[in-house]
Image (tube, rainbow, N blue to C red; front, side, top):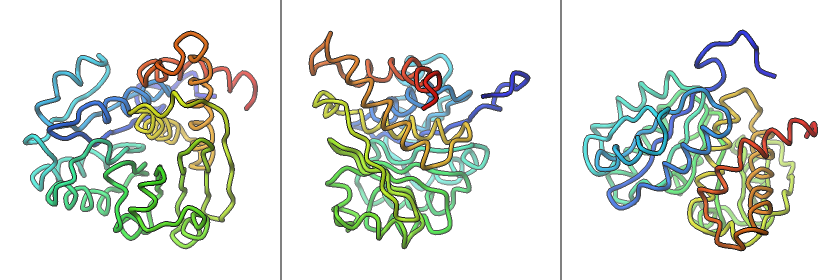
Length: 262
């Protein structure tokens, strides 16, 4: 329960760093999901070309444009300074795969002092070394596990070695804790394969972390909420409900979990 005498910002501040010249939706989905979690304040760092469309998605977003169309060295110091004031950050959704953007992203991950949720372009062969000593959650799908060099049947070993929480996405999500324990989250349906649901999951994990949930509980709850949202939407929309409708379900499904004591 949150303190009834709390003030703006006391119940979670989240930053999302993502997007590229050709991709604006991923970081917006993550930011909307963080907002839907109940986080008080959401900051979005995004390419300058997408700043206006990002502002249009929520009157509550505080938008910080990159200096250019993609993440670059000139953006690093300002973003790290912002993250120092955050309760949690999502890094990676929609970031370009060019050398400069990835190198800058790696530097930000290594330098950021706040807890982080890493998704998409932030999941690279260097990721596990970049997060050493940090509170971090990785949210890979099967292809991203392969890119990081983590075998699907060896996730627990890597989580234990690197002291990290891994939320491995799939038809059945697996939440792997640093002690090697694995929790499986079933449910949902094939409509969740649409682009953007993974970004929403990452944003929801970050929003819950920012409000004081442990990494394990944030992962388990976020996975459950996304899957239940897909199940709720299927009777009306079939598999074509899309990520935005999933995000719109988040507050209701989260509240139901709290009411049920889950």
